[in-house]
Length: 309
Length: 249
Ligand SMILES: Cc1cc2nc3c(=O)[nH]c(=O)nc-3n(C[C@H](O)[C@H](O)[C@H](O)COP(=O)(O)OP(=O)(O)OC[C@H]3O[C@@H](n4cnc5c(N)ncnc54)[C@H](O)[C@@H]3O)c2cc1C
Ligand SMILES: Nc1ncnc2c1ncn2[C@@H]1O[C@H](COP(=O)(O)O)[C@@H](O)[C@H]1O
Image (cartoon, rainbow over all chains, first blue to last red; front, top):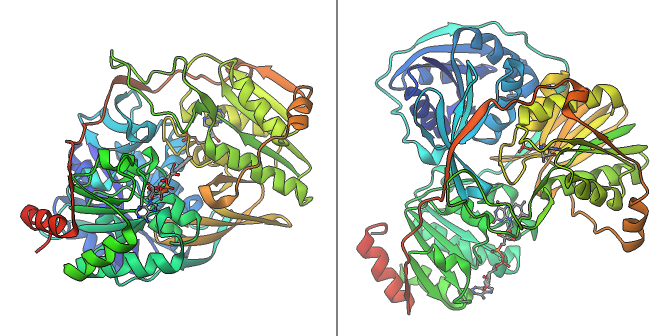
């Protein structure tokens, strides 16, 4: 079997999410990549060096610069004439593009794959991770999105893929990029961080969120996350949200501060290696998944923890 | 401009789903069912577009069992004008849902189709994008802001790194994210009024769509449980434990 993996990249950097998708695709057989974008020769060269990669298809056009699904999906559909599976990381980019490809190919997509059993059989969480389904596809070609937390990252070196230029159809004339507000942060990225400190509604204000959560995260070299309640209340930006409908994370250490542990939040973090919860309510559901629980007032305990570390 | 809003009847988000003992699925007998939360947001957004004078009519559609009528009535009570139930007791996958919706869109000629970004039962996050592909329309997924002007719509999208805005040619597809709006509750008079709003019942065959599933569920199991942890009495004890596990130096 031959798979085509969509390379996720930003500002010339190939993103880690791609590496997990490559590991998943490698379970199916041969791995080819697609780099679509504007001035992406650097990304294509980096992609060709990834261990186990065969061919790297490069589609370069201003129309692909912002990964607009209307423009990129036809390129993928065209390449799928010579591939058996399309694999995308389950990032917002992958989730946006893959179903469009699936419909063009008349294939039922399998979302959020956490295990590849065989060429037709895949494992995925449903109902916010409260159930794990094993599904078998009868489609001739497969379209998958892959959860980064479920697969090791392929090594960034050791490969010697060949680069091949593809000419796509360019701008479909349906959509255009207007602008973006991408938060620049010195901290590690949430989905690949080893340690995450997350704050919930209990923080009470954006100011308190920064005053209490940030110093602890700085001490631990951690990324900062948040519950939906904290994001909704404006204490933290939307890209901090961890959960069923936010980011799925599985760091070595997850510290949940003032988060109750709603199933939608647990769906995004319960595969973390070690979970620490700080909450004043000893019956908070977060303690059912926490390895270490500390009951008390976060405004007292977190500064003390930060100080003593 | 007409708006089409697909709404799905799903397990209520406050209910903890239980896996059936025989491993065939999730137990939905006697479980509270509601409108998919993202679809409530889609209905709300449609109503706001109508209140602003951008939209003239809101048609809601659900593909599912007879009981999905309740979901449609809820949408009508919130403020939608008319409903279509595509009735079937079979489970219909996103690809087939998108095919039925494409046929309905061809009939109804909406300026925008507003869907939820994902159904909280299958967590697929596919239908809107598939529908966009089938119709050859633009798609604005995971929307936190929707602004229609003339023959285009600006959609602000919640992406991994933050926010992104795209301009889409109309007609287009929008899928909603949580922060787009806060859905209203239907008032009692509106619930009464909704009972007499038109609701047409159709079948997948009326749209000549084959809903045979492409995926077979081989098994459904509980996720692996975490071992019960310990509660510590102080910050010092917490730090000791963390040091022992080696996650911090
Ligand atoms: C469709 C849908 C999708 C959703 N997706 C997500 C998602 O992806 N991610 C997500 O997080 N949520 C999601 N939610 C929301 C979820 O249901 C909860 O509402 C949310 O997670 C609650 O956030 P919280 O724990 O911060 O707030 P709360 O539930 O209000 O909990 C606050 C906690 O702080 C504790 N506390 C208060 N004061 C203190 C103090 N001084 N010191 C210590 N502890 C204190 C309280 O005991 C309580 O346990 C979703 C909901 C829906 C309907
Ligand atoms: N059976 C259905 N009936 C009506 N709308 C649906 C149905 N299934 C999915 N949708 C719509 O598609 C969105 C995404 O669903 P999904 O792709 O299943 O995650 C939902 O939020 C609904 O707006």
